[in-house]
Image (tube, rainbow, N blue to C red; front, top):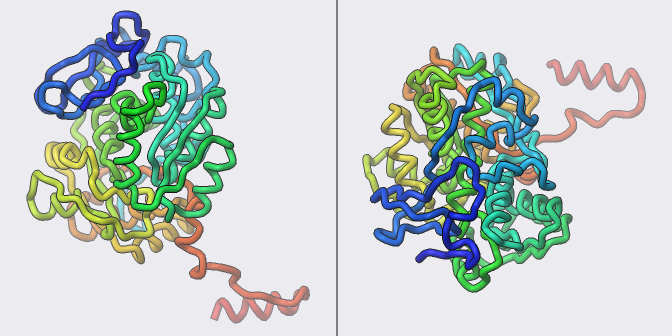
Length: 424
């Protein structure tokens, strides 16, 4: 099925920067730029194809302190920065020496995307989706979400002066419900898991021609926002590629687009196209891609999620086969970790680097640890871990396990006694 916004059926009048067409990832068939996501020939997924002009390091560095510094590499209007938006991106890249020592890695970096406007990488993809949706003639911003995307869509719509419709599983963490509802858009809790919510969103997208579901009918544009993580890592490393990168996997789009971003930088001569390996991280309770990798399969079998890492709880990941392709092509691997290991990963990152990650970050750190121990991730190679969301969104994962070291009377003697006890 293809979905088209009536006024934007062809690309002739569209300003989407260097984007020139939508190309099928399976058969290569191309269609004009429009609000479509499935190939009319084989029903494979569509992605954006480009004709890049001249892009230099200097032109990027002179750009805005946001993802719009890469606007000449994205499917967005040339005037994108002039419209009200959340201006995500350019988050910090941390040299994680203490975490490296704990994991036994020679050189380690943490890409901390908790600093985005709604505290996750989803602000990147939503900003690109909104910019494209405006150009395509939509007027309502929508999504099905496991939480972080809900926050980002509601905030971006509010900033732009748009209405929003957000669908979430009714079991979502309360913190993510509240941090979506506060923007006062339409928030609908749906009985069922994310895959049920996603199916409903697809139906609604077909029924409401002015609704832009960022990860459904404008998904090809939305997904390109994840490339900016790869762009930033390379720029912040001094315009070079890391040797290894570990990426959490939900739908799988982030991993494939970081890989695409690295490849584009090399082809454009912005970095030396040195080899790199891509690793994927999942929670054991929702690890269909990791299990397909372990078993040597090309087909990803859907599962019913059962994990505290709800932001990764997509049992039927759309980009699963493409994750397998990217990981295998680059010589990487996929791993998965238990809920207990997820919590250990959250706490390890917090105490070594002062970064409080949500459960997806715990998955990334714990999976990296496991991949190092199994010999799949090279401890001597420069490695980047992507931390994509803030721990304040998933406090229930650590509540009951951490708290005050002691409760004492308001006297110096009591403090000294408590400290002596704790040290023993």
